[in-house]
Image 1 (tube, rainbow over the protein chains, first blue to last red):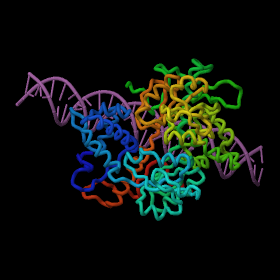
Image 2 (tube, rainbow over the protein chains, first blue to last red; image 1 turned 30 degrees about the vertical axis):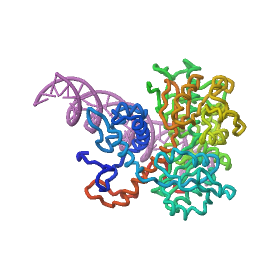
Image 3 (cartoon, chains in turn blue, red, yellow, brown; image 1 turned 90 degrees about the vertical axis):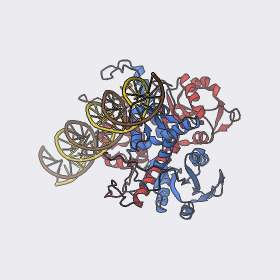
Image 4 (cartoon, rainbow over the protein chains, first blue to last red; image 1 turned 180 degrees about the horizontal axis):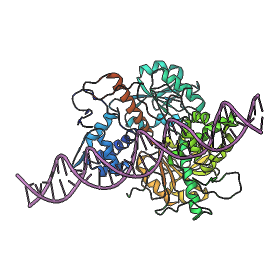
Length: 256
Length: 256
DNA sequence: CGCGATTTGTGCACGCGTTCACAAGCGCCT
DNA sequence: AGGCGCTTGTGAACGCGTGCACAAATCGCG
């Protein structure tokens, strides 16, 4: 960290920049910062302080500053961060300067909704193709795209430059789909099926399981209920928390 | 940890058990274990080793054993874990013994899919009511439930014993909906809207943002591309990784 | 031109989570 | 009955992430 090295500004001379290897936790927060920055830009803000951006993104300011410091020094002391510059920088680091093509496999209940979700398009992605294994669904048009049979994946993947695969099939089909995606060179997969995928090294899989999120909430509900029901339990250990109820770190009371 | 205290077995005498306060990371994995256990039960397994269950859940065995040890000793050395017992135990800890009522607010694109998603019902939840603010959508029937106007929330929340609120509205409406949910006593919220919610202490919010997941994948794509494109960069720092590409810890190559 | 107010960038300490490695315990086979 | 192999449960070390607190830097004003 001795060298003060800019990891590559997007607007600068085309010299390709060694991407810094950011901590995974930081990467996971950058999109949230980006969303907050877009909001700020739309409401006419030219600069933001770390405090302001942090509260807009739901984190504390120290964390935000440390996160941003990992991409270089793009703030001005005494002033704050230039919103436009920071947007460009984060979009560059996240690789959003090119609109990556997304293939969505499985056009059932959830897949249908994902295909119509405009949040993808508005945040840097292009849903480039829809696939399903059910011949009854092939040919259907959703949001201007025709559903194709999964067997067409190899050809379409090349034509449409698919970079990311989204799996929204039932669990039993998910592994086979993942294998097919990997086979055509996809190295990033977003999996909505409730199952573990096994993929070769070098392929990234992120999983989103809606039921799991509810079950986590259920645990906390259960816990809150058992605490309030038992101010002091028979035997022992429940240290009565002074401040109030225990809460997760997911997101919490950000005083307006 | 000196006392060997069973935190309360579900089948035992009704004595209510002080719920152990599990590490948050453990709580987040329990649902995954539960899903894997259900799979094992359906395929006729009576017992599982930590190794077996771990690979089915996509984690390593040490982590799994430590996680399970937090709920008590429900394994048998030399044998493994009793599948049925462990299912009961995890379901109890997660509070899934009662089917909690879920209110879904926002029946647009995504909300529609969530309302029809049978994964909720099959994993311990009951979608008890659908709401929307758009009069044009009120009255529509989805999956046997009629969409009601959000103003009916207070009455329905009591009638249906709503425990969890799911927000699937556009971002600008989300905060108002969250406030309404909190006002009727909901203390657990699952938020699909791309925005930060502010809620009073004691209310849990979990956020799922589909675009963020893609953006995280995009970062890794970008990074992989920049690495393979530049075996040795001009100046410096890129230590050529020996094993291969860098990968996230999300999920990785579980040798079949 | 210098000073004070303000805000970034970061060294440091702390706590949580993960992983290793092994002792304790259980069942089976002889 | 005794020993052996297997598996759990856990103490201990390590590493990452978080938050504090402050020095460094910049701007505006007198």
